[in-house]
Length: 251
Ligand SMILES: NC(=O)c1ccc[n+]([C@@H]2O[C@H](COP(=O)([O-])OP(=O)(O)OC[C@H]3O[C@@H](n4cnc5c(N)ncnc54)[C@H](OP(=O)(O)O)[C@@H]3O)[C@@H](O)[C@H]2O)c1
Image (tube, rainbow, N blue to C red; front, side, top):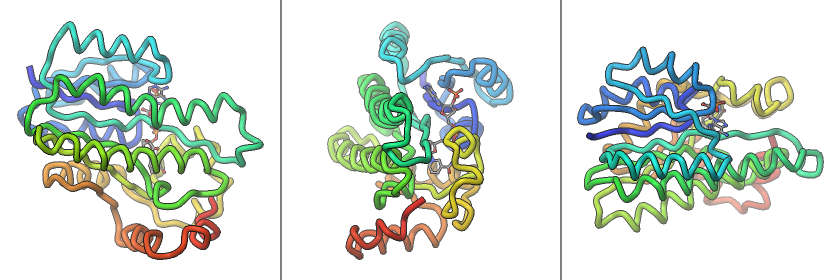
């Protein structure tokens, strides 16, 4: 059985990845939808063109990640596509952020993404695809989102290294570096109404980001950055001293 796994599928970008899956990967026969809110996963599953399995997991929990590993071990599917989209980002200075929220960002954005990938890799055949959702925040640290931007730098770095490791296995790895999207992310992270930067930047449409990510994955691209504005930012952040860019990139 050829499956796809989408984490963070209950809302926002992850939901779009699930909705656009079958048109992009017609070989996939079933999709495993992962997030904490099972009712939303069930509702989404009914809308998909292929059978969907709701896998309600809290990916910050080691026990839940082990449950996913066991499910893969029991069913031994072929994972044709893995989309690591679950993520969160909280706006505030490090010193003013509840340590539990700091840990939630590092656990979900880095630890879970790494371990879900590790769990899926033994089941990924030649020609399969990994899409890791990073962010423009990975280009340069964003003060007031210092931990979030650092976790996304990890996602991009992890993706590029893994891509080299998997070259011989012909498995593509693509890091997606979107700009802001109007999703639950903004409310969950206390960003809406509290960040001049988020009010000023152009927004990305999750539908277009999902479509572009899949195009980039099928073309075996290392990175996908939507919109010319953010492509330019990526180049400037590489060329200019980071001590200068960090002052402009404050959220
Ligand atoms: N929105 C933006 O401005 C923006 C910009 C660049 C990159 N991104 C990245 O895009 C990705 C998707 O974010 P989004 O904008 O679509 O936000 P979103 O609507 O808040 O989606 C986040 C998803 O992650 C899931 N999730 C959160 N905590 C989880 C946990 N402990 N265990 C399992 N799943 C969990 C949520 O589902 P449950 O609550 O049901 O668990 C939800 O499905 C994230 O990686 C984010 O960092 C977002």
